[in-house]
Image (cartoon, rainbow, N blue to C red; front, top):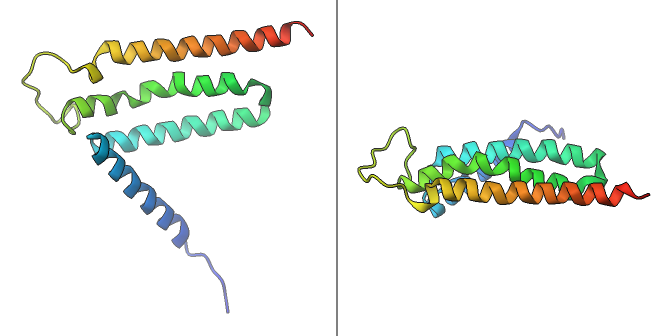
Length: 133
């Protein structure tokens, strides 16, 4: 008997992942394309920071804070899609003049400010911890 992997396992895992992303996009009310784009960007960012964490174990808090600070802007198209009623921003017409709070600059930049402040706090903590040895 010959055991040969013809790629069935990676195809199955990818299909399950896409079904989970579709369910998540329906649950939050966003378009599937914006959720897949954000998930791909977050996966790439997490992989790069995970590889950096492997070599720089002492900077774990700084790297995890960096994930949130750099990953938050990748989710902005999802917020726009939620505000547009589940459609992409290019393909929808919004007759109302005012943006919803979830798509406003206060939400986007306010949360980004918090994440950057946490990143600065983590970096200062690492600097002070290593300064006096």
